[in-house]
Structures are given as structure tokens and as C-alpha cells.
Amino acid sequence: MSAANRSGPTGLRRFLDLRQQRDWLEGRAVLHDADEREQSLELRFRYAPRFEKLLRRPQAGAVLDILGRYGRDCIPIPRRTERHYWSVSCLPSTPGKALVRVNASWMELFSLYPDGEGIRALFLVHLSDFTRDRSRDAAQIDQAFLEHCVAAPEDVSYVVPRGEDMFGVRVRGCASIGKFLTERRALQAVRAFNLTHMNRGRNAYQASHCYSLADHMVADHGQ
Image (cartoon, rainbow, N blue to C red; front, side, top):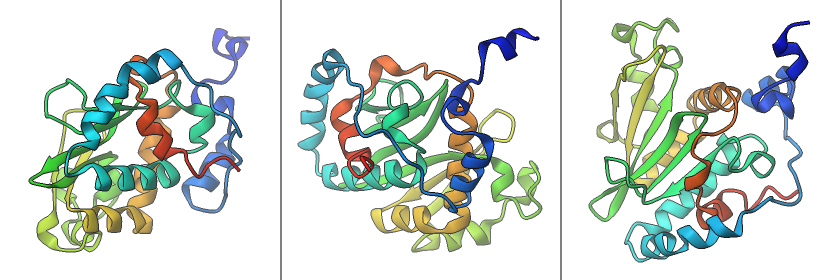
């Protein structure tokens, strides 16, 4: 027996088998989450001042609304996996001046930035989920589909980061961010990327987890 087999499943496979993950990805399953959350009071108090600072920003209401949707629709069993397999940072000190950032493993998944008094989002997804032929060829990016996913064509743009099968979708404004999260193919793409990285093992950003933000992401997952 190999060392990998002796150590057992890693990542989300500790909680959900591949069929359960696929059913959730395709919207065919509602997963049962934990009723209670494991919490670190030290971290809750450490990032409370940053959360209070965020609440004074004009974008605060929009940020919490979008985070609530993202936690509900884009992260499987968020209570059971909180901090150890995904985390959310408040006003992170990394470059870019993000308001919030969601991470898993070593990867950024989703960020919100100020855009005047509004917000803009960056979704990291697999490039192959946004090409016309499902290849990893950036020349095949499906611009028409991207524009279909938002309220107005000018609200969407993209970047192709370094890395295998990586794609960054930039979306401006609450209306377009919300629409992106309700388009079936786009939502599946977000879920697929998140599953990829939550399955890679423990989250490297546990120490920057902001429980006050996470409260809004897991609020409806107690049942």
C-alpha cells in the first residue's frame, strides 16, 4: 500500500466523495453542512478592527451581500471546511487594495475591490471553462459568453494569469457581479475552480481568516 493510501483522502475528499462533489458542481445536490462552526476567538478579535474599518466604507453593504451569495453558492459545506480549507481576508495587506479576498490552498479564488463608491470583482477560474472549444487556448476565449454573463458588456474584462488553465474574470458593479453568479455555466466554472483548490489540501491562509466576514458567508448553512 502506498503512503498516499495509508494517509487517506485529502482536501474535500475527507468529507465528500467525487460523486457528491460532481452532483454539487452541477447543481443536483444540496449538501448537509455542519450545524456548528469551529472558531478561533484569537483570530476573531484580531481582525475585528479591520472589519469595523470595512463597515465604514461606502461599499460595505454591497461587499457583505456579494460575499453572502458567494459563500452560499460557490463553497461546498462552508461551515465544515471554514478556515482549514478556505478563508476570507478583510482589507488584506497584499498588493491591489482589495476589500476582501477568498483563498483556498495556496490560491486566491475571489476578490472584491473598490470602484469609486461601488465594487468590482475578480473571479479566478479555469481558462478551459471560458473558451469556445473548452481548450486552454487563450485565442479561443468566448467573449460573447462573457458578455452574456453580465448586465452590460462594458462591465466585463479578463486577464490570463501565468499558470496552467488559469483565467481571471473582472466584473464591475453589483448588478453584473450578481448576474455572473446566477448564470449556470459561469457558476459551475467558479465551483469547479474552487473544488480543484479545496481538494489540494489544507488552506495556507488560515492565519488571516476574518470570522466577522465569514459570518455573512455561512449564515444560511446551518441546516
